[in-house]
Image (tube, rainbow, N blue to C red; front, side):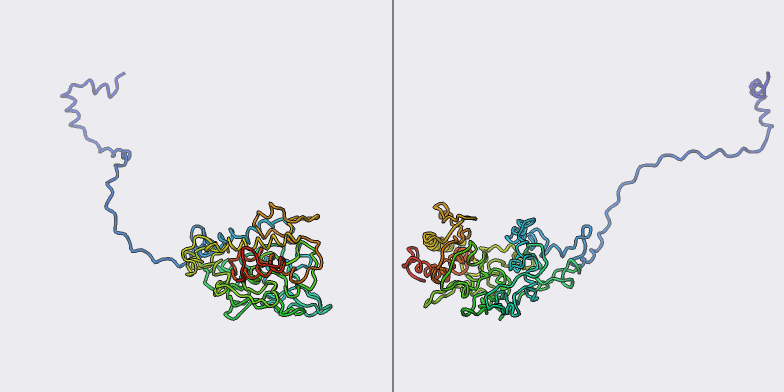
Length: 442
């Protein structure tokens, strides 16, 4: 079959050329656009532009890192802030040890314990919310007085805790008056120095009272001294006993809890809380000249923490050095003072134990301190051995003084002169002569 294509191929070249030359027609349409080619290589990076002007610094305490407020870090929540310091303290350790324990039950039964141990202890006291018998009640709760003479029977009593707290914790709000107007957790503001006022009076003329009455039958208290912010320590660290009315002409030892409560540092530091022997005078050491009392040694300011006091509450050796008192000392045993005081107190302890007045037994029969007990110089573990009756005031006073010093003198550091005077007088009342380690009364 002959097609157009085969016919054209059959034509000779000259005829084909002639034929094509005499043929004309319309131009054909343009062909379709081809596919886009691949992207060429990027060009070289240009020179860096000039850095812009830095912006203004943000306001202090602005939120960072998902909302953490910088003001929280200092002085409270930094690695060495108030909270971290407090968590190394005995106050915090006691709180942890009491979790799930039975201490709270000891004050919910109308006892005095919660007046120091409850988280709202001081707040309840200074507001006047305490329990008492009769119509008189405590005379000066604001300055720490908890003892009173009951109007119903004229006997000496101690105010009881009347709050509702079920937590045994000395916390920020225990000592500081914090509410919705000054709490940064509520306001979102930054800490401002002085914004956390203490709950007790801290003016230059304010004095907390220890329980010691001015005379038998009178519960009026004794001013501890002018110690400014140190007043808050004194409000709890006290004997709870009015030694004037506690030591009688004749005394029976009926309980291991006879005598001053644990932690009676204020009675020693003030130089006023021990049993005073007739005709003897008592003095104080240079430590009583500290403007802020306990705080100057136990809470020196931390420069890197806005100058806020150290809230571990442990005495700081740097405080002793920096105040110009013991510049070159390497320990609290300054010139062997603590070692000597331990020897003095040990002599008094042995004399009392020989007389049958001390024990470490927790239940009957109560044994006297054993030779191994006497080798342990942790004096604060000693308790009264029940059973003795009819002790004279001077003998009972010697036992009272030993317990006061064992629990609150810090081996004499709190008031070296007063401590030695009490030891000398107390030992002589028992033995009739001076201690070998303290042959002369200071």
